[in-house]
Image (cartoon, rainbow, N blue to C red):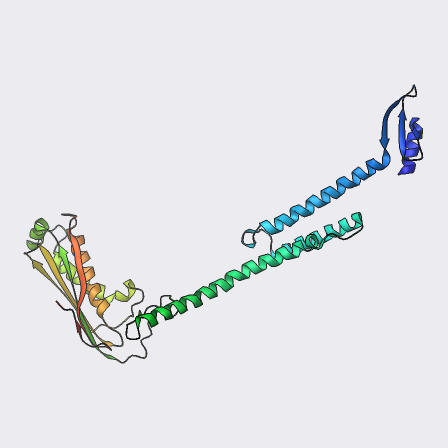
Length: 306
């Protein structure tokens, strides 16, 4: 390069001095500018090194800032990023004559390892949460006492489950539930006279209640699909408070109770009364849905105390 400069300068009529200084002369022999060739070369190399350093710093920040969950690189691309940083480090070593600091050389690998550790921590945290929930449930049960009935539809980890009734003994089971529909005087008189536009309110509600009892396991997700031996739904008009009193009964022989079937029967019957009468009034209330009595099973006979 030095020879090329000398030839070029001589062709242009310039004077090159041995100590690396180039003097540019004009036609009259005056000096316009003095430039040090070695300084120009150092400046050029400094610019190249600066560009390499900025590129390495950018890649390093990119690997640290962008999380694995939102990164657009695959695991293979992550390895390519690390190899790219390693190649840049070798290039810097060839320029400076010594390897870069360990922190910069290993930044890509450490970033990938940190992201892997962060991803694995979520898996460990999920299993830890399940264990913590189980411990909390065990602690609560111990605090309430061994004689306190638990929630059978809640598993040991606190998640919903369907009860396994296979170990239970088969027995005759019955349940009676009740419900009240407050109509108001105007609607009560129309129902009593069978003058509602949709037809016979009490008969339609009775059929709807029986049908509802047979579909309990479909409506209530964790109820067992059982074979019903008998379903009864009775509706009675009460002139004292202008309401409809509904009573439902379900019976079966099996390993699980029929309380939900009886309560579903009166609930569906009450909603059907509302549907049949809603055109005449929107003040109708479906209230007091409750279990009145049950028999059979492990707990045997139970009756609501008045």
